[in-house]
Length: 182
Image (spheres, rainbow, N blue to C red):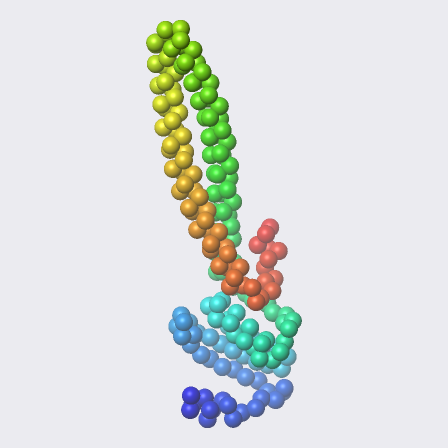
């Protein structure tokens, strides 16, 4: 604190001066560079949370309500794009499994009716065939259910990542949004 008071606090910057500060982010240990030239402030850091906090704190302390900002995080956008593709894949699998389950339920109804008809007509071989097919369909439905559960868990995990990304980026205007959606 004393160093801060001696080195930084006593200095006033004018609009024509440049400021170049190199720090280390305590959260992650990554380098943090803040550079101010007249009319522009640049913050460089891999930690998007930290940069968002800095931008929010600066805007708040300077009473700026609308701040035009641009954030460039190539690894962040690549990871987010990959997660969104996974979400799309999981959704496609979910739709396919739901359609298969509907097909199986219709087939089950048909096999139950045929099995009961065979039982009433004392056709034990036909009844046995129907109930064996029902057993196989039941096993398929249980396996499909397990796949749906795993798929749903993975989908929720990916959606949490997307939600976290949105939360991390809420203070920025991302110019890459159009590129991400294409």
